Image (tube, rainbow, N blue to C red; front, side, top):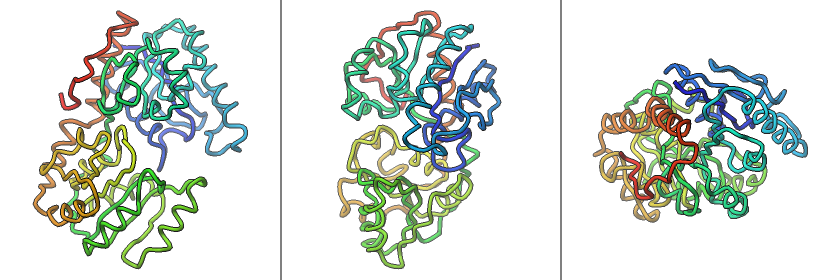
Length: 355
């Protein structure tokens, strides 16, 4: 069994009640690893709850701290986690913190595994990543690797979810769902147009960040009564929204490296209409669990075909490919490999996510 030091994001406490995708994946992975008998130390904010050994490295999550103090607190969080990990008997240090841990990693003698979570998309991170290109990295999809192919990718491990948090539903709500940040790259306006032209209502759930408040308010102010913004929902309410929807609309104007809401939708039995970008072709099975489209015209046509998609098939796809148990199993195998060989060769770049 592996001994793992988990350096977690601290924007939110664990488990995050609502928005907090990095924290949610890290939490679900940590909990499943503990269930499977692994020894996990989680470095996180003091008010976190976990069945792992919790080492608090910040009094409060960053979301509760003034913006000007967040970088300093996060740096202390990382420094403390590295100091303790290096002094203890751990096999692998696993970071979910983009490039931030890499700034301090030269003081760490243990193998560091980094799950990118889309970090290489931002070119501002490339210099730091290339300085440590030899270290082992996990991509969430094969498409994510194209952001920076030079890195030492040792595995593609898609995110997994607690399937019990998203029970299969019957749909029939008479609406489409859009779930995500109301930001330009998420293109909620395309979801609005798709729903309007399809003759269906649309329910929008997601956070509105200060940087995109004007963008979001403009979109919401221009919509009619058929579009409802329901806010940033906590997990039970989000699950209900998705499983009662006739379909999930996933428009994109960037190459999304994964898309957690897509597998949450599949687990709920709700088929997906996704733009053919990023990891979507690796997650959505065309004509089986949803449809891949190139524009709103294609999306409208796909919406009219959603009734032909089996909700049971969507659920089975999530059970087979995107459970927290499978995610943990894949990471545990990688931890074992790294404990024996801290610098394994890169995995074949064409290894399919579906294997």
